[in-house]
Image (tube, rainbow, N blue to C red):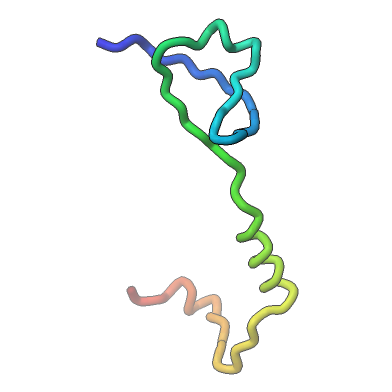
Length: 75
C-alpha cells in the first residue's frame, strides 16, 4: 500500500524545462513525487469573444426564439 499524498502549492516559472522548487519546500520534497501542472488559460479565447461582442455577426435569416418556443421545443 502506498503512502498518503500531501499537496504543496506554489507558483513558479518554468525555465529551460525545469521547475524551481521554492526553498521553503525543498526539505519536504525528496524521492518520487507526482507533478501536476496547472497553467492559466490563454487569453486567446477571450480575445475572440471580445471581437465578436464588438463586431457581432449579422444573419438576416436569424429569428430569436419566442418565450413559448424555448419551453415547448420538441426534442
